[in-house]
Image (cartoon, rainbow, N blue to C red; front, side, top):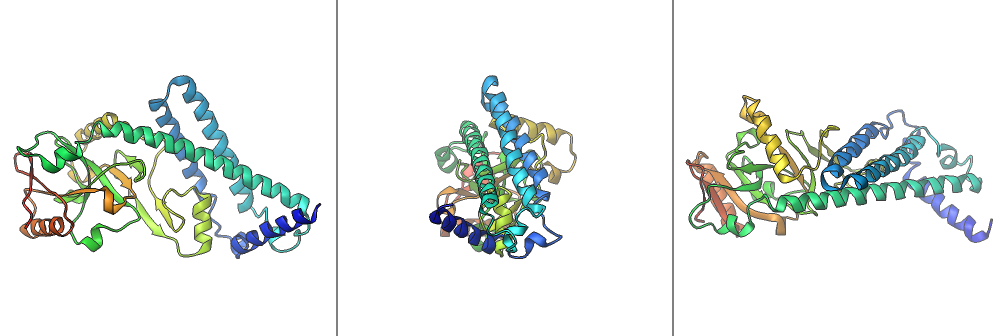
Length: 329
């Protein structure tokens, strides 16, 4: 082996020792394997979605590639979880550069597989968002309707307070599709923030409440786990989201139809909530402040103040269901 190759391998090994050998390889509570089921659910979700946005011949090829890529990725994670690198990081095998090169090659293969998977996911999301653009009410119509709107559709984060320090914080917000026919909000809240849906801010969707929450990761150990689990939030956050194998990146009409069908079978309004998870750029993705006619005076005043402070349009839903422009205080 050439001196430069030995140096390169030592550099890689130094990275492994610093980032991976920090105690957790030998810990009994190593949790990578728990993510594998979620990974496969994510594959099934993409397969379902591909069949909606691609022709059949490409759909089958894409679906096979997704499964193959996740198999490579998961096998690599499993081998790490079982202590495959432990000899190297404890020093016992650090000079076996031939064996180390095998691990480096496998790592590169896993990285390439993950990159290919994410590229496919990004393309499906792009097509999904493009489809939704035709279903959501045009931004200008929503902001500046003069005579009131009887038909409308927008993405709403339902809130119980319009405190700007609480409303405009990330990295993710839980929203839902709100229309003149789909009037259900989280916990039956009376208003909230209307968001733009873009390829950059969209994460995932569910016809029902997916019980999503985001956990801030505070250690290198947690960040490594998040990275190897294909986290779609950021290096310093982990996303928890109930995402079944039959879920999909639905076209707008399909999603709205499924929500309406589900609403017919449920008695409690609070259970009719659907969920769309976003990671918004607040300076650009917030469209308006919204409240319903049956909100409390205190809630309405908060909404009006937020709209004024943030220089946002105020959208009000009247008792007859019509939307109208609000007047800022």
